[in-house]
Image (cartoon, rainbow, N blue to C red):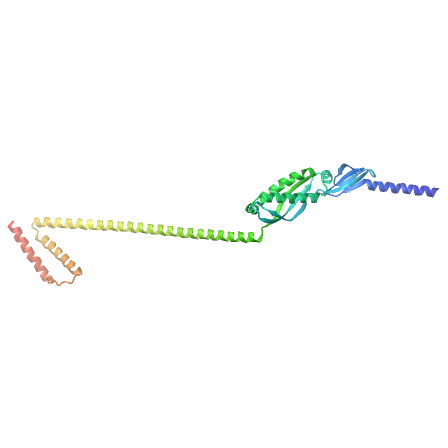
Length: 306
């Protein structure tokens, strides 16, 4: 009898320990557990130590509440201009409501993946190839808006959608490469022509400035020349006036100076003349003085008659 009672007590203690272990649940950080009572959802367990009712309650689904990366496999897409391209991408999502994610959709990740692939074909198929290759940000934004709205009833928040690769067919890639090369050659030719044009303009401007400066120089030189000739003429006029005055007053020396000056100037012009001439002139100093003296005598006689 005492042995049977002891066994009973031990069994009760073991049952109590088992019930305690069944009722105490430790939830890791970043996770949430759903609790079902007789198959019906009742509540969610947060990270930490939680207590449930043994036998009646059980853990339904263990949901990862952290942001999750999902790879979108490659798929063929026909664009608006009938070009076949291959595209793939990635999607980041986070479970916001564990109960909805567990009970509103079956196989959550597969559902998100199929939804993303369907909308990827829809969005990319509504665009031309050129738009497809140049507007990835626009594609990402449209996909994010559509998928996030569609997954909201599932307790999901889609945080980011990115297109990784877009691969056009080989012939289109080669055509694009040829087009790019032609565009670059065109830009190079335009830049070269623009450089030549600018060089010609600068050269013409330089020649224009040089011509202007040369004309200004010639003008200045002519002005200086004119001033010099004017001053020379003024000096000669003053000298002539002085000599004329002296002659009118009967100064014989002035006549001698005037005649000798003109005589010497005439000899200089004959000497500088390029024509070949034979001149018989009294070049000796005595003859020059004699000639001047003869002229002086003539002048004296003329003045004497007056």
